[in-house]
Length: 258
Image 1 (cartoon, rainbow, N blue to C red):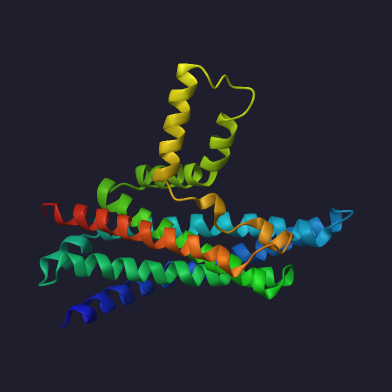
Image 2 (image 1 turned 90 degrees about the vertical axis):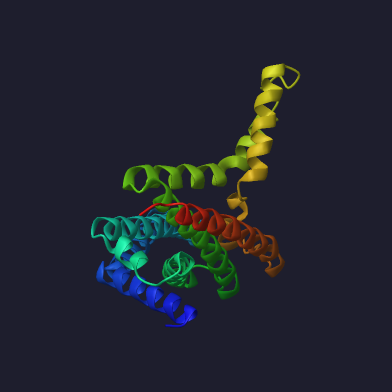
């Protein structure tokens, strides 16, 4: 079988597995719950009802999408390890790179479909252009989560440690900008050696992690401040970190002894 046909076959099997795990119903139930809660907030809010709904839907759907995608990748790989499907596939005349890129392509397709699904409810509370910008940014964010989850499973081979690493990475990347600003605040003695060391560590972490605090901004939905040019650095960062995460996962896969 040609190389790209092998990748396509593995990606197709990955999508079938996600469908059999009732991923569609999980996404639909999540969207229904988010819209219902947003409707409840509309009844409680006194003013700025549409803005409150947009902010709630944006935050809720973003976190739910990240959780669903990471859990789909991790549980899918755990099931493949437990069923010995991983060893079976790699025992065939199939390059390990073909297996890796096939799984990554399959889970990346899942991430894109989840991003599109989570964007559709926002058309009820935000202009189509702003919702589209938010959706593209969410897709980039989910692709990074997908690649990171696959890397963690290939490295750690266990559900809980992989989930912990993905959650820590995501939370740190989401809040590192705020942490950096807090370290420069007036309440800290910037002249002290310990504070300078901590600030240096935070600055280094800022350079290492992707700036997810600038991805999928709720301001775009609430204040309609999104512009197409804001996607340029987001797409650039996503491409760079996808290459890095994919290279790390491929390296770890090739060094495994089966």
